[in-house]
Length: 265
Image 1 (cartoon, rainbow, N blue to C red):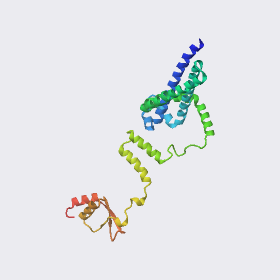
Image 2: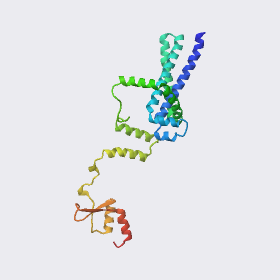
Image 3: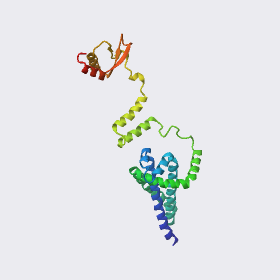
Image 4: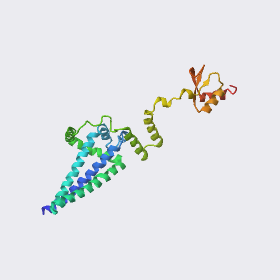
């Protein structure tokens, strides 16, 4: 009689635990995908003020979400194992528990909720941060203690220069954003050109002295305009006695304006 009353309660508990774990997974996915600009846009809505606190200390809330999500999954696993142990031999009960929980954790807590969190980040981030704030208030000391223990047994001190370990990873992130339509083509090219500019030497941009295009100071406007059109340069050095004696720079727009205003020049 006791088994019949306990089994439905255990099953309902498993469903509630996995549903809550799925909600936390969706919230985590949403919180990690929103930017500071989105946080500012949501500040006037419900949960917006808490999102501002999250942006200042994201680790505090993400850590407690991870802790409670794992706690829900492990508790559901134990409850499911207790149900199977009443009806099946130990080995068979353990095998069924592992098989079912792997599927449920992957689909119900993993793929499904995380996809929803990415698709509707505003919604899940606003409601998720409310829950995370309450959990952090209650379980904050526990998460700090666990993190301290983790840091004590983990070698190294983490990344000091941010989450990107190389320029290639940041380039790949920009490419992914471009493929998803988050970054326009011209913006994509501009960002990549910034990296290329950092690797460019000054001598690569300089024109060799033997290939310089200049004009003598005693040439006419039309001669200067003709030289600019033939060379394709918008700015041409004006020299005095020779190429080493540069006395100024003439702009093609100024040549065109002066030539138009003074036809006889």
